[in-house]
Length: 188
Image 1 (cartoon, rainbow, N blue to C red):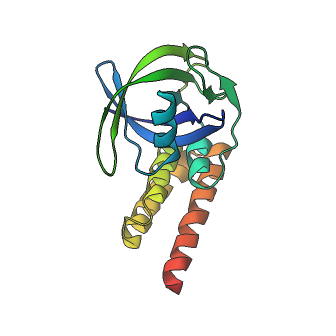
Image 2 (spheres, rainbow, N blue to C red):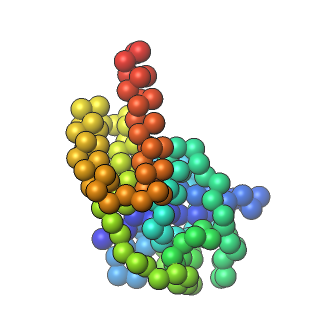
C-alpha cells in the first residue's frame, strides 16, 4: 500500500526539510523511496531517521511543490527531528536497512513512536484533486503536456464541487506552476 504523506527530515545542522512523498507500507515496515539526489535522501542517510506526517491540509503538499516550505514544526519525542504542527498524526522512524538503487534507493524504516494529535474528519474530492494535481506538477518534465491538461480538466470537476478555501488556495498555486510550464514550452 502507498500512503501520500509529508516526510520531515533534519540535517546535521538541525535544519528541517519538508517533502511530500508516497510511502510504501508493508507489514510493520515503512519504505521511503527518495530520488537521487535529494535533500530527503541525504538527511535520512546522515541521521538514520525520518518522520511521517499524516495531514489533511493539502496546501502543505501543494506548497512544497511550489516553493512554500515554511510550515510550523514541533519537536519529536523519540528521535532528533521535527513533525508538522498541523499534522493529524505523526510517526517517528529509524532506518533499518537500504536497498541500493542508482535512481531511487529503498529505505526500510521502523516506527519507534506514533502520536495522534487531531481526529481525522474525512477527505473531500477537492483534497484528492489537489493531491493528484500535486503529483502531476512533480512530474511536469516527465509527462506530455496533453496528459497533464486532460488530467487537470477532470480533477477540476471534483474540486469545483467540493473545495473549501484551503483547497482552492493550493489548487491556485499548482495551476500557476502548470501555466508557467506551458509558457516555457511555448517559448522553447
